[in-house]
Amino acid sequence: MYSFYLSLLILLLSPVKTWSAAVDEAQMQVWESEALLEINKLKAKNPEKEFLLYMIAGRELASHGLDDKALKYYLKAYEYPTKSDKSEAVIQLVALNRENKKELPKALKRARDWFKKSPEKATPQIKRWLSMMEGHASGKTPYLEQGFHSVWAVDERVTELMKEGNAAEAFQILGPLNLESADINQRLRQDLLSALNLGKEATPPLWCLSTLKKYPTSITWSMRVCRYLDDWKNGRKSRESLESISKQIKAETPERLYWVNLLERL
Image 1 (cartoon, helix red, strand yellow):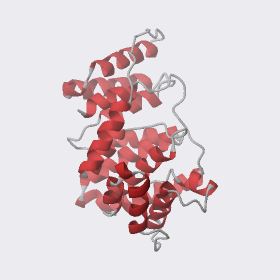
Image 2 (cartoon, rainbow, N blue to C red):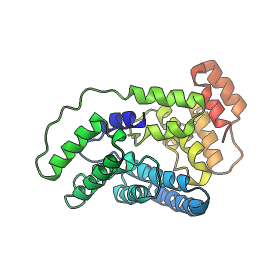
Image 3 (cartoon, helix red, strand yellow):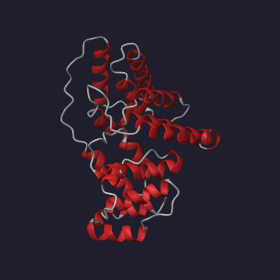
């Protein structure tokens, strides 16, 4: 099923530069160092989480426009000895190398090798996109109709999984997203799932903080959740209580009460 959603996400890959969002690069460097420390701790104890951290490092760095570093981590994920799904890594290695005529053929070979070994992951959308990139690599980009798909299915499935308490699969399905112009709910969802899957040290800088800085005294439920996550990540006693957050969400957006159940797991 993940391949289906990954296929939809391919349709969002811009023919120009990968998405970037305004961010303090120094802040991302600090997070990268913390993530590397966490990776070193996990090498023997939890190799699958080590692989996940390589994938997330690539995803986050690419989302913030740090493409060179993102390539490094996606390559580590691809080369990691695991049976986990590497489709995102090989696709992003192609996408991020799109304008690099030397590296693009190598990236395409990795993708071909991966999908040859895992043919069930190669959906029609993935095959068409890779064919288009093959043409681009040779200087003859074909026009291939990608269809008019919506990413609503991704959001719906992620919501279903979060309600089930399956934060790991929900996080995987989200894949690389353009959060530069995303609304606060999408940013908070990314932050919450990152926290649940990666822990305090490895969770990337919170996407919701830019909004919180604009409205530091806001008492909306979204800003209260952001404060809670910020305090949790920094090891502080929370300025917000789960009880008050739950009460407000129940009164204003009861359909999101499952968020509180996930917050309780931090």
